[in-house]
Amino acid sequence: MGGLPRLFLVIIFGAAAASWVVEAQPQARFKCSSEGKTCRSLVDYSSPNETTLGHIQKLFNLKHVLDIVGANAFPSTTRGNRTVGKGQIIKIPFQCRCANGTGLSNKTPLYTIRKDDTLSHIAMGVFSGLVTYQQLQALNNIPDATLIQPGQKVWIPLPCSCDQVDATDAVHYGHLVARGSSFQQIALQYGTTQDALLDLNNISDPKSLQAGQIIDVPLKACSSSTVKNDSLDYPLLVAKGMDTYTANGCVKCSCNNAADNATLQCEPSQVKPYKWDTCPSMLCGNSTIGNVTSAASCTRTICAYAGYNNQTISTALSNESTCSAPTGSGASRNSLQGWGWNHLLMPLYFLFCLSFLVNSNATCP
Image (cartoon, rainbow, N blue to C red; front, side, top):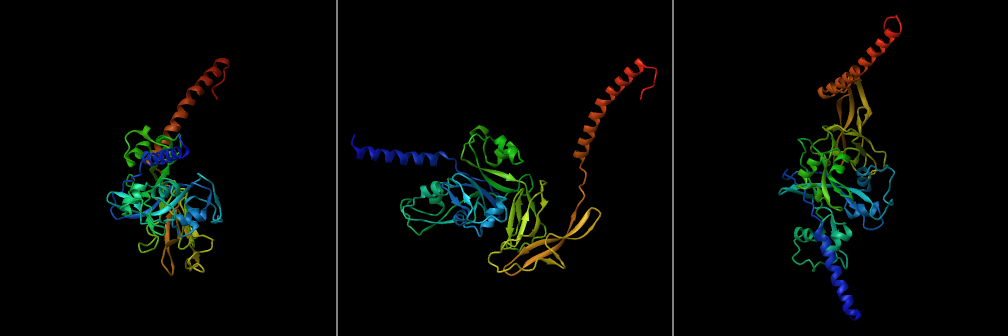
């Protein structure tokens, strides 16, 4: 067979194989019944090549590299020139919107088509399979997938959800399944259950999990009751173990508490703001956001972050409980543990006493 026909077959076979890979990858469909609701979500991005945080920030149309820094709990000193290795996982925060029973990123990110791009390359080679080329074609109303032009912008519809889980707010995380993972392992890692993951992802057989698949994992989160509903970052919900930089980078809010509906802890970020030359006042009287203004038994009052707009940062005095309330289950568990040790030691004690009495005429100590 001549060189040209053989090359032709290789090209055809390669294209067919690439199409098979795209088709074989399950499309991520996150349930989202809260019609019209918007929220913060996360998704894993595996970089197809060595790159930088700054490049990823621009690719996903994020306001600032601090968005990535907070979502990945990087040090606040991390800059956009930080190297990201090929295949390294970076959590991407974005705004989600519920519509028609599913959740997708709220018309972001927008990708500008370059020369020689194809929808398949954009889906797999640029965004690492977070979307399929069929989604790109359908949701961008492209009649012919082969007729796209350089400079044309296409919406990259990232999977997400805003639904509560067990009547509790959660941050829905598009988790990239690693090779060898199981639903049980993922559930254990992120503090949920296998049944919850199967239900959220509409999967009946846990053995059907595939490496490279994006699944919906609900993360426990902290919220703030002081943030006003007209604030540009409302509602403010941050996943456990993560931070967010808000108010144009002036405020850092962290979720360090494992409890459901834990209070978000906010403080001045100590980093250079963006969009503002300097950070506006963040005072409650003489106290700064995050500082305790007064304390009493089991209660303290702090200067809390209450949101921002284009000109100012709002604050509010907030009372917080500092004493942990005993729970029935916890008390019962401790009682049972104590009961178990006491009843184990008592027979040993009497045996010791009996032996002591037999071997001496003294009384039991």
